[in-house]
Amino acid sequence: MSSIQQNLSIVFEKTPSYIMYPSIAQTIDQICTWKPKLFAILRNPVDRAWSQIQMDHRYADSEKLLGIFDGAVKELVTNGFLKGPFIDRSDDDREGTLSLGQFLKRNSTIPFQFQDYTLKQYAELFVKFNGRKKNAYLLKGLYAPQLLPWVELFSNEDRLMVKRFEQFIVEENNGDRTTLAQIMEFSGLIDTHTSHSMASDGPRQYVKLCLTCESAPSAVREYLSYLYRPFNDLLPELLGEEWRDVW
Image (cartoon, rainbow, N blue to C red; front, side, top):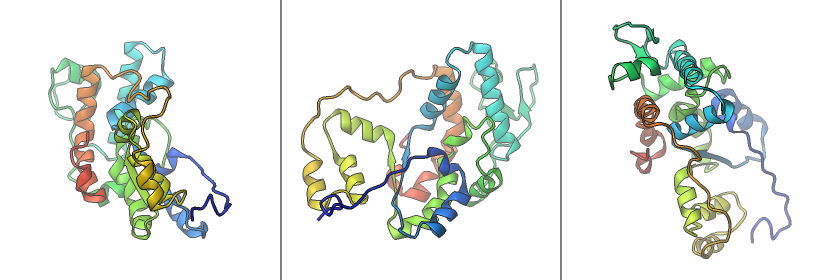
């Protein structure tokens, strides 16, 4: 019998920024004695970063957007996620981590100098960072280091589910309830039998959900894809082989 059929109260809470605070994972583990279920829905980090910048700076001109990217990349260098020096839009030919402007000027030179860190070492940087908000547009897309303390605390108890945003949207737009049914079953809202029938109950009539409202320009997408590739490559180590090359 499902929780709804038993007339139990089901309470949901949504705070995406929790993922950036390792201390919050420990706090939930210590004070939430009822052992809540936890969900993380991960979006392609390139689309996530561009979407947030567009939302926060909808009317910014190209010069301001370059400045926003510069500030976000500097934050990664300052916090040790990338090697310096940070090369801004001057005519400097040194090797280092390039601003978006320098990347465009140098015509597809690899723009980032990465640290030779393990997943654990990157996660320790997030403990030091502890979710500071200043210019975190790009930092938020480094998923594996952020997720590590959550996985370590909750996955062994089957209390953490991580899903990919794009898969969920494609399924929904094709009338496929597979991921939604898995989420519902995991949360205790339906049982296994119901989830199996729900997964193929046909299309629903509603406005199609889009994967991204406005795609990033090709140069920006190339720049950010360079940035996120080594961090995306850490996901299979943490979440399993089904996360290999998903973006």
